[in-house]
Amino acid sequence: MKKRTNMTIWELFGKIWKYVIPYKWLVVATLTLTLISSLFAQVNAIVLDRTVDSVNALVTAKDFAWSKAARILTIISIVLLGKEVLTVLIGFAQKYFGMRMRILVSRDLAQAVIEKMLTFRMAFFSANGNEPGKLQTRIDRGVDSLTNTVNNVFIDLLPMFTSAGLALILIFAANIYVGLTALFIVPLYFLITWLQAKKLRGWRREMRSYHEQKSNGIMNIIESINVIKSFNRERIEGDKQLDLQIRLTNNQMATRKVSFLFDGLKSFVQQVGTVLIIILTAYLVLIGYPGMTIGKIMYHIMLFSNVIAPIRQLQMIFDNMNEALVYAEGFFDILDSDDEIEPSGGYKPSTVRGHFEIENVDFTYPNGNKALHNINMTIDPGKITAFVGLSGAGKSTIVNLLDKFYVPDSGCIKLDGVDLREWDTKYLRENIGLVLQKNHIFDGTVEENIKYGKPDATHAEVLMAAKKAYLLDQVQNLPEGFNTKATLLSGGQQQRVAIARMFLKNPPIIFLDEPTASLDAVATEQIKNSIDAIKQNRTVIIISHSISQIIDSDVIYALKEGRVEQGGNPDEVYKQGGIYKEILDASARSLNIDKIARTIGDGTGEQ
Ligand code: ADP
Image 1 (cartoon, rainbow, N blue to C red):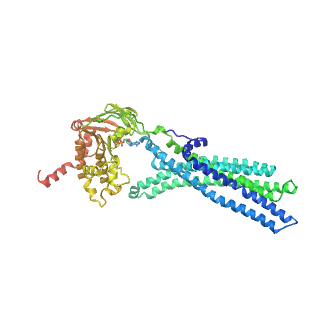
Image 2: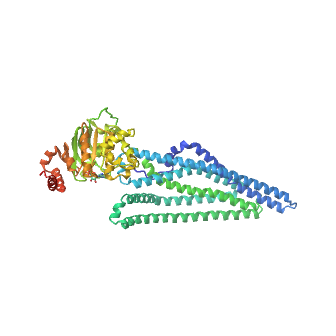
């Protein structure tokens, strides 16, 4: 995936625009209401100006009358209270519509990224930097900060500028010199805000990476808690996190320090502006400048703070937006990376025979680990083909390539004579049943888990599949039967759920990657019988360390360090010597076959 760096604000707008369009009426409604309430903000200044002047005039007038005073106060009260009632109502509607838009946009963004990620090829998920915890943080923080930006840009920005602009017009209308003073302060304020954002941006990127590492670390701890505890590694794991926490908090402190310094500077600049305006207005009053009264001092200060307040808010928006830019980079790297989408051809034959040919295949994992070298093999339907080899030899990797989870670096894999690249990927997988060593049980009941590959299966079909996987009796004996939560089953039972799922799907091609590794001997034998029964007219590939399964296969391929060392009929390959013989002999020794034979013999008296 190509990493985008330094996204500009305009690029960001361009990208979030389409998530806002569906809610344009909510935006228009909220915006209108926000505009109205920002206009209302000016009312206080105007009323105050009039009040001071009118009361002043009344006090100094010769014909003072309470009735006049009462009239003025009544008008002021009605205007101010009326304005307040309207503000409350408008405020409610504005917040409600605004929040509704935020929630909906945030939902759409999250859903879009999830749906996009589901289309990605496996290479994306095994690439460095895409560990589950990191991806989760990138998505969560991306959605949060983008939603804030949507609100800032589409709701807050326009009313803010309007309200600052209106206050500036009023200030100029009141007096040109005061207006010019305000106008001199504003760019200074902007400059400081801009410098602050620039300084913080690098730290923010660092912070994003710390956040990703932190949540990935927490996930890893939870996933491996039993290992951590059994090795008494709590302290060491804690210290690993502490190191990260210290870097994170140092970064936070540095960011805050800079923010506080700049905030202080801005307050000072604002205060300087206020002082200048007081001095200027007082001077104008003192020299008897036309229209200047004491009331104007308050009026000008209020207007000036009405100019500065939105700009202060702008600083917050600027801040949010800078944060969003940093997080949006990671977020849109996922959402826009079409090069990660799983490739698919259009080939969908009506029947799949299941004849694989692998020709000169090399393969390297995204992290640069070259796992396969010049692999050549043929896999026939109606036979059980076993892959043997030590751990890490590349057996699962071949299965990954046959399931089109990854694409070879070079060479070609054909199924029924057609390059896998040309096959419709979904159709191909519909025809492949995959049972892995690590169970893949989802949150849900046993029945739901068995039905995972065939959601429309009937209960009877589920029972039949469970029976074939030797799971039926065990599940029926549970208090909640097939409604038991599948995650509560034992490892071996979960494995059988996976096998039952495969039986239910009933595909022509079956890949079994150490399917009986977590089963007891009796279950292993039962499953072996089922697999033997299912192999007719199907392609079965089995990766197994179980000697009985290997020896019973029709063809074996022995792999060593990513290369095929031997291939053919198990007995013949054994006679050749080599890795297969080594493994088989070692298995036999480890099983202590001689002694087992003696024990069995003694017990039955047959030997
Ligand atoms: P086997 O199934 O024979 O035990 P694998 O096919 O799982 O071996 O692994 C072959 C090699 O590829 C090993 O060196 C393993 O570490 C590496 N490998 C497996 N999966 C990945 C992955 N997702 N990313 C990088 N390397 C991998």
